[in-house]
Image (tube, rainbow, N blue to C red; front, top):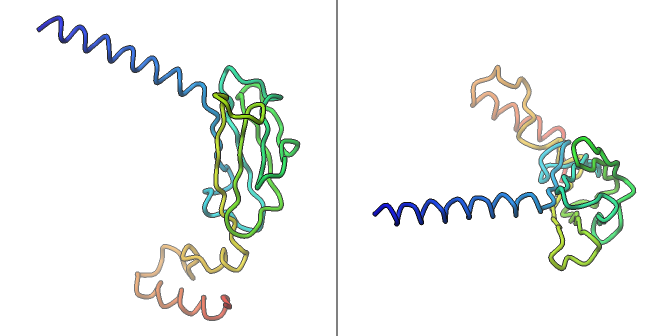
Length: 153
């Protein structure tokens, strides 16, 4: 019985070490200005975290196939690139981080950023007349009136 527990513990330790090693090899992309599915007005502040084995000059960043690497600045202390992406098209935008542009076992990552028009951003349910002060029925009526005045098809 001790041999079974010992073998299971050893396997668990090896698996945990392999998982930690594989995580440190990945590039991570995230938006800082808002959730990636709630971006509006065509701009997004983006962070790209680099693994320890990747030099920043080896990473290429492409937005919808267009090279946007020059829009990012390297922060050596945080091992990350930060940049303001401008010119997002309305709808889905794909940001790809690829080491050496080939992806054959190299670190890479993809993030889909959904850009909404300003009208869609104004007409989201997050906008209420008096947030937090109205009971739900009043807030719903207020939202309907706001939308009728502000949002156009």
